[in-house]
Image 1 (spheres, rainbow, N blue to C red):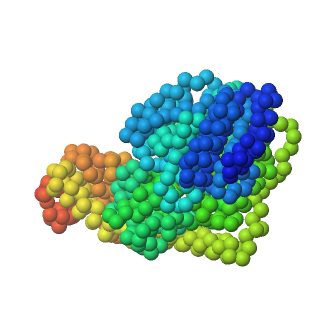
Image 2: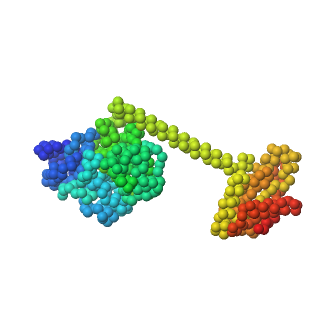
Length: 594
């Protein structure tokens, strides 16, 4: 496998500069040739001329091309023009398929593509070139997701060098099209591909939940106009022309199915919705993000190590126009190291595609760099250079930007830790406010609240609630004869028995009412069952051996409520039943009637 690159600017140069491609093809060393054409020209005539001329010169070659937001040649961003990338294969079968009239037929086209991919013997990968995001991508990709999960899928959306460019096209030997998808397949036992992505943007501020979305339109965040995230935090007026460009390098970072996605806004509509690159789904958590040079460099370096270990013979780089705008004159910094490993070509996109081969899902990305490493056969025994991004070029304003983003990132980390610590502290304070310090049961206030909530539910749904009011018999003599410390041990061990018994029943709870008095709350328990539970509980306490004290007993009042009954009446009745149990000899249960 081999890649030869040619940069074109004028018609006369075409025949002169393709001599290297022609010579390699005529050598007879290669079975197939794929010509990628990346055009940075909005005018279509020269681009179309190049494609058709190459199809005449190389009738056996497969030709596929796209309008480009920047042409990547050997790790450098070219001056705007046309880049030809000729990939030569010794044994791989390469084929280009064109699917027309996609808009309005997305699901049917997706099904057709899925069937085509599954029909190709030994298919390893498929490249998608798409003309912008004017059609509904979700139904399209939902169908393609069903193809064999072992097929690697990657690609990009066409678009011009200018962020507000209205023109988007792809093309093949037949000509330019604005409503077609070009799919290039790679098949063969000797073909190997390694595809991955690099993001490097960090979350900024608090997350928002997507509460309303429609395809590529983000309508509401947390039930409010989605545009407020830009208006409030970046002070971008939705009424300004090309308003989204002001916040282009602050895309929205989504957490979805355990994966990070970036989404940049094409336009902020006057109705407060955001027209996005890529599909947005309701239920996503999403927040503003910013490019952190240190994180980007670290992630690119990690990817370079994996590409180096793969030992590619050619690399394609598909990177987002937003990354180009972010780096400005340092744009080559994250591209050059790949070209030190092998011949590297690609283009700046208006959106990127990569398949999660574990789930089979094709995911649309923005502000992301895709690197597609290819080779035929086993890895070479030759060692490749150990390359890393050289970020020493970041001087002056760029160094200030790096320090500023580091400051933002560190501050965000500190704020997030402070928020986490505050949540933990608030939870501790809540538990302290609701929990009896000695026994660990809910305290009197929380017990009363829990009972009243169940009484309201009983009044609404006519469901039963049973309450057990419990008193430890002769507890005063424990304190007098053995000390208050032993008395505390008795209270804690009694509470543990009550808690265990309560938890044996659905949503059962035990609470300390005060002193040696407790409640066991039993939702959905009828009268007879409540008496059986009370008797079992009485027996557990009677059989328990308390340290130094030995055996103790408890008395109980039991009441079952169903329907609308006043809480104060219930407490009076069950307290009266408990009093009667103690007065009639203790270690017994009295049922209260109301």
